[in-house]
Image (cartoon, rainbow, N blue to C red; front, top):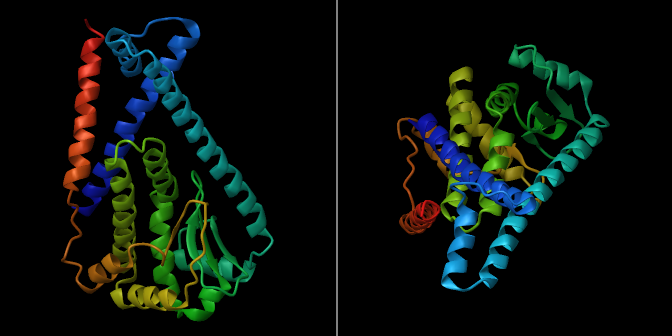
Length: 282
């Protein structure tokens, strides 16, 4: 059930966002080349404002479209640059001995696993298309071998599912299309569900829920919160209460309840969109 929730949330966020973004690109294309495109939301808005007699809103509409596209490009470029810089920086601190031992633990011939020299306990998965599992020597000293293996299984799930990319996309959509509040809620819920699923995967692979729960508690006690603009998935930074509850009672499946107000507002926005599409047929 939880996997279905996660897939449904991601597909909903992606579908809503891509429809709007494609319409925006088509709108700018029509303005640039002077060709009319049927069934375009933003052309419909422009036509409506002309009929009503408030042409200045046309410029506001164009501003919104340009802002959204430029904001998206800026966030994507920023993430790409930060990932590139971080990869170069991490290579200078790699502990080859521990990295090799971790690869043996996973028993999959996985190349994208690194242990870095760092005193703080770190366990993250970073990167979009070839995500890397990154653990620190501080984590190695803090946890037992069984607990490290459980953490490794947890991060391997994120790596396999490309969660850093998916989490970034849901965050990106909620940031640039802020006028649909449901997207922000979806982004938050998706991260929580993926963490629960990763814990479930780790428990099934290790066969012992105690290892993953002990690792989570130890890391929470030793964790130092730092503000990061780089998107990654971290073992001990997200949805701790839900995860502990699930580990203690796996039968208590995490359920998603749509927020009433955000859902109503978002549905009304799409109702307006549908009406505007109909205007293009007149």
